[in-house]
Image 1 (cartoon, each protein chain N blue to C red):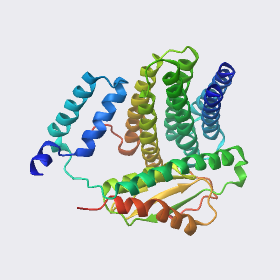
Image 2 (tube, rainbow over the protein chains, first blue to last red):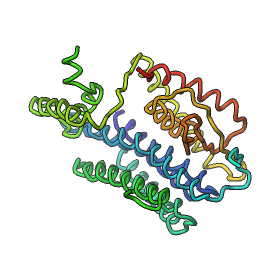
Image 3 (cartoon, each protein chain N blue to C red):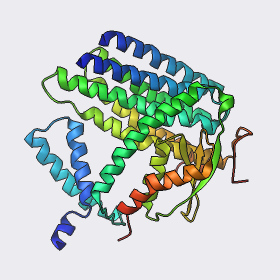
Length: 105
Length: 89
Length: 166
């Protein structure tokens, strides 16, 4: 049972990591590419880290919670770096896809 | 069971590495490359966590933590450089 | 009360530092609990000059409920974003839009911006100089006013309740 939960978490995490990078690769402009890594990849790595925390807590005789630290750190920093990158991209007036609705013009 | 899941996980994360790396080469602009680097950092954390599970060793965790911290600082520094044309003021 | 305020200029920071120290060392042994507590008391005290604004949290239960809602939304949002990414590029309708902010505290605004970045298909991009409007980019948006209304009701209202000027 425990192995099933761990395997599901690992597969879920790996899938979301892949989806994030796929979004980075295939979407047409920078602002759309920003969505993949900030959301999907963060959740994917979060799921992997939680799987790791569960594994080491149950397999060894001490409780291992320090993976939680990396998870929290990633969930706090991912939006911050996304915000700064978007701000920089707006600042240097990066091209957007033509169909983008834009109130700034 | 877990072994198979981990192997599939390795394949997915490696593919993610390749895709991010292609974006890093392709560009076309600086922010795209910064974003690709940021994604590569996070992919590296994922790969290290998977390796830790595969070899059943807790040692990889410290490396993952360091990459998380350094990756964040690097991304912020590069974005600041684009915003101001200067990192330190 | 006055002595308490002097010893703990930022009680929340003290608790967070203590938690981080214990997590980092991955232990609950008595030595580290005491050492962590010493650091957690002295670091906020020594650095209190760098933290000019006092943060007051009201209604911690609302904050807890808000965190649970956000965690759930992150899960749902990722399913939605994964579906959008795996679909065809042509069907996506990206767009920028402004959100008029009601909260004024810096911490509240930054938390709201982070929440927006982590949840359904939106990334916060820029804050206007006067801190009145937040520019948001959405991956796929059909009807802007509905989304703005939902963000304001779901995320901004509880944050405004928790973080107010003192």
